[in-house]
Every structure is written in structure tokens, then in C-alpha cells.
Image 1 (cartoon, rainbow, N blue to C red):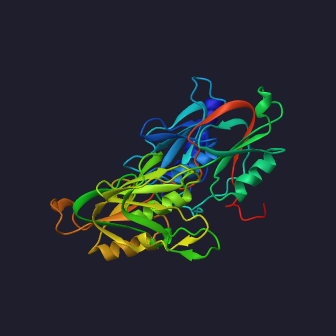
Image 2 (image 1 turned 135 degrees about the vertical axis):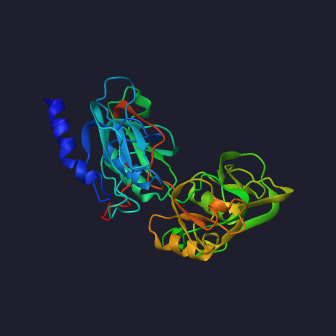
Length: 373
């Protein structure tokens, strides 16, 4: 009977889902097998749907719930797409929930995520810990720290007594990061002017850069960046970055951590600098154009356009577009000329791993929820 009920549900919503209309409905115990782009961890189907919405090419998804019994894949969020824009197969399957991207809907760029997850651990991405009386206070600590995106609180019944009431604050990127930055003749890239990063009401500042200077060692993470100023913004957003070095040859941005000393050496092709924690950078890198630079991947779609300026304006006008690459008329392959590739990355809170763990509570910051916290 359960299988017949699910099949009836699928038939009843089939006509809606095959259009480009907004379809927020979640389908419990329905699988969209195959056509995977990638999988990411997610605590529930609603969060998985938001991840699909922010992913540049995801059109639908299948989420493996905590009650899944076939194997140990719990909290797996499979992001999917197809050339038709629709799942090729719909299959009844216990322990999963499927649904569609909210791209056609009027979804918020940064969704409110108020749900708390008992006996669920957001493993990894820790940058600070403290002791709090309960998970509500831990969530308040996360919400009031601009770097915190999610948290895990260990309650008073946890097996190891010495870490009871410990609140782990955790980080994920809320600023624009391109997957790849590389040199390529005949293209020009840039960012949406709406991608300006604001850090609250803070005085303006230029930041501190050291041309032809390397800060060797102490690396925390390596990221692609379009310029030293972009790298500086990434360092300023990361809670443990104390300084950085940017290599112009390969667009490598090395975020570094050493609170005790700052050692520098002269080195051509490298610009190093310090983060701006308590002032607002001018974000000039957002409005710059990068000739001969390709932001490869992360494509939402492409459209044919007359020039790079039109591509820039189109990205600015599209609320989903964060950055772009335009292929000029002198590009070696005529098939790609005049293409404007509109692009974006996931900037919502995204735990690197989600797992079952007794006597912990996890959740997200509430800064996007529009109420007093």
C-alpha cells in the first residue's frame, strides 16, 4: 500500500515538476537515482534543498535521512541535474527524501536556518570553543560572532565528562570563492558589483599590502583568488587568518596563521598583506575586470552577448550571479566567441561532515533570520 501511495503522489505532482515553476514540495521516500553532480553533507532535506538552490547547476536532489538502514550513508545530499532539467527516473525508496531546486522561486540569497539537530554532530571546521550553559547560549554565541556559521554543543550527559557543556564554533565561507582562476588568452572575467562584502558599520580603510614580499610558512589553506585585494578579503573573512601571501603567477592565495611573529622575505611575483578585522575594505577588486583571466567552472548558464561590459551588467542584474567570464571575439575557438558565462558558488552555511552522535546538539547562526537573538 505504501508503494502505491507514493506512486500516486508522483503522478499527482508530475505535471507541476516538469515545468520551470516554483516547486518547493519535498517527496518523502522517493529517490531520483543517477544523474549525480556530487554529494555533500547536510543535516536534513530542507538544508539539502537550499544547497541545491545555491549550487550553480543543481536542479533536483535526493537526501539520505537518519532513518536510512541499507548502509551507513546518513545525511548524504546528492545534488543532481539532467539535460531535460528533470529526473529521468522516480523510484519509491524508504529512508530518502527528494525534491527540486528553489531557483525558480523567490528564495533568499542567505536562508534562515533555525532548526536544531539533537544527537547530530557537525564534525570539523572548528575555529573556537568555549563553555556555555546550554545549546541556546551556544547558538547565541555563534550568531553574535560574524565568522561563525554553525555550531555543535556537547550536553551534560555526554560520555566524556571533561568536555561536557563545550560549545564548538565553526566556519564555512560566506564570501564569494571561485573554484579556479587561470590565465587564458581571449577572455575577461569579473565579479557582480552586488558581491561587495560589508562588515557592518565600520570605518573605511585601504588595508595593508606588501608588494614583492612573501610571508613564508604557516599556511592554513590555499585558495584561488583574482588579485591580492581579493585574497585580503578572504583572509579578513577567515577567523584564524593572521596574514596572507598571493602568488600572481598562479593566482594562489595562501591564508596563514601565526599570532607570535611575522617573518617576511623579498620575492618577486608575490604580494603579502594583513587582514582588516575592524574596518571596511574598499572592495575595489569587485569592480575590477580581469583581462586574460578565466574563472573556470561554476557555470549557471551562458548567453551570447556583444561585449564584456554587457556581460558584466547582466551579472549585476541577475541576483543569482556572483561572477562571470566573457569570451572575446579574438578567442582561438570561434564556437565559444561572445559567450557570457554567468557563475556562482555556495555561500550558505555548509558543514563539511554531518554524523550521528549521542548527547550533542548542532545548529546554525540566526543572523539571517531577521529577529532578535
